[in-house]
Length: 449
Image (cartoon, rainbow, N blue to C red):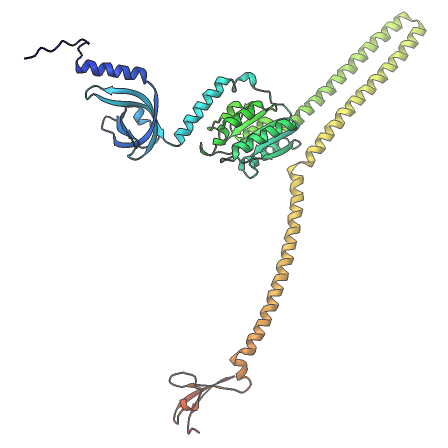
């Protein structure tokens, strides 16, 4: 019997060893992302979710406990590819390595969301989203550049709102693709071109709603940096209200929808008209108060002059008073006329852009097209009628009825109703039926030649 040496390292029990291994794993791998295929999916009565994530070379046992397992937006099933986040642990009872999953989503869009969050974090650290970099949007721009697809619904919504709120605004479409691989370089090129041209007071970058993949062009890092270096104030309106993109974060102002962006970009012409009317009323009131104050001062001066009684000073005072009154009246009339002229000019320009005026013009154009269509249809019907008459005449000329009218007859066998073309088909005693132009005759063959 041999004597074995006593162990030099601390003696551990299986429970202590597995507990130590679990602590090491959980402290060093507390938050990991993993992508793989679901297999062995099981959801017992407890509501917890147990499954295995595998790829071509390995597999990992996973557990997702309530309530997180009940929050999943999809139903886990074998064969489904997922993207999961969790912490590495050890199931001590069986000594098995496993992942405790805290978040899981279907692969594909989940990968895009991960890329979105990573880019968002990196650009935020660089200061691209800082409020100090945001430029103010002009209250009343003269020219707006719209960077979007020329065929998208977003452009129609924006133009409709701009036309309704402020028809005098100058709008320039800067067409670019807004989806697909060609979209980011095209948007970057257009943003850089506007920065060089400096033609616009404000830019609107917009498109309609869609999936995260559809909107991915606006999560491109190059697009974000092109927005940041563009000196022109930019409003971003990407997708619907719930959609959020990197472009929204970098832009000087984010709008929930394209229509909302148009509302933010221009003032309401009707509100401006109301303000002008209000200012005109205030101007009239102020001019009346000024005239009343001047009249009171003049009355006071007249009283002082009448008390002093020097005729010369009184005459000079009257002369200065008349000149001052005339000058004030001219100034008041000139100011009133100028304000009224400006107001009438604005009203005329607004009326020329009124939807009713433009609708009447389009209605007259439509009536002209309608008359041309009716004339063209009438001419076509006449040509078709003449052709039908010619074809009818040709058909009648070839009809057997026309031949019968010239004295010919058609012979039919009375029993078989077949056409008799030869005397051999009608031996003596055969019953025949003769078809003439105006009726039929029954015949019987007596003899044959």
